[in-house]
Image 1 (cartoon, rainbow, N blue to C red):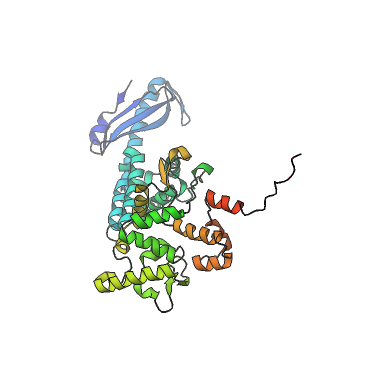
Image 2 (cartoon, rainbow, N blue to C red; image 1 turned 90 degrees about the vertical axis):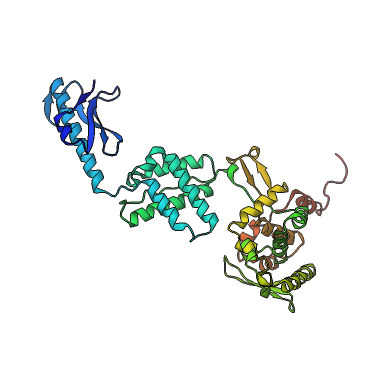
Length: 394
């Protein structure tokens, strides 16, 4: 049975209306319900026992309990509305939109799209609560969201999305919209064994396919990566022709990740190819005369484009049947070329110290992690062992 508050609600109808108390099967108390000034239905327990009993030290009959519950319901409604009015009630969606607008034009298109995806996923997970005040989001909510995302993607993917959401809450904290950041202290479960993907090295045949079939600047980027012994994509796309010392036959680079200064000796084939490409670039003029890869250096997400191109040629594509939680992923990226060079140097008998100098690794442990021989290379290495199995049969 529902009970309405009449005279009091006539005076407060602009703030909230339709205050009622009702029974609920699983609750021993009267439950207050009302519609707030924004048209949303609210509900709270009055803690007044249904059928009468002791309430705040006073024994109430059933009829008295009903009336007391109705008065408590009105007080609850008033307190909730007054509390709401005292705070900044910017919604989750509003804060996300503000953060996204601030990124436009200030970050790369890929970074912007990643942020937009993270905000969309969080708001979709919250559902209607995305339009409620961001101050109502708790750490338990963020943990539940993280668990939901980990059920479908790897830890690193969740980490990237959570970093974006954490920044939005940090902004809300700095502008005093919220009192604390609910993302602080939230840990992301690690990848399980079947989720971890080791980016394999390209085989020699796959490298030939890339050089022959990729668009011109991408084929050039692959050649430059191999010619500089596996340097990273960002460094390859930042190459200027002035880095090529034709007299000494070296490529002088400063790595973007570690700041290490490299002077990479050019093999004869790479030297001849690069020299011919440089001469053509000088004749063409413009950006081509300055940058080795003028189009790719302006690309918002070159790594993604390379992966899609590799996928088109059926290289490094792994399906869900291989295990893990992803539908499809790639076991070979541009960074796999670094592993290709490290592995080939190892297989060629180059000492670890010299190989580390060429590739640019300062740690033997890191260098070792890049050596990823194929089954054929392992079989060839195994074939070099003496045959211990010939002799008389017992």
